[in-house]
Image (cartoon, rainbow, N blue to C red):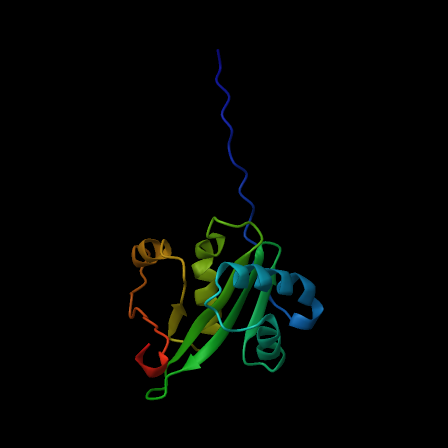
Length: 151
C-alpha cells in the first residue's frame, strides 16, 4: 500500500511594493485596527499611521501577503541610520510570515543607506527566534504610570 504524502504548497515570495497609503487605506486600516485590538498598549491611532505615511515620515510597503510600515531613524551622534520595522501585518495570522523576509528588508535598508535594522515587538516568542537569527537584544523597556500623590 502506498502512503500518500501531503506536501504543503509554499507561495512564492512577492516582494512588497512601496505604496501610497491613500490607494489602499481600507485594507491597511483593517490591519491596523486588528493590531491595536491585540495590543492596547500601543498609543497610535490608524489615522496617525496614515498621516506619517502621507507626510513621508514612514513608508508603506504592500503585498498580497500583508504590509509593513518602515521608518528611518538617524543616529543623533553618528552618520548611521537604522531602518525600523514599525508595523508589520500578515493577512494570515499567527505564523510570523514577515520574519521569513529579512533578506528583502535588508535590501531596502541598503537601498536607503541604513546600517542597521531594528524591530520592536510585544510578542515574547519572537525573542528566541530573533536572537537565534542574528539579531541582538539591545534593550528591554519597562514602563510604569506615574501615580498621583503616591497612590
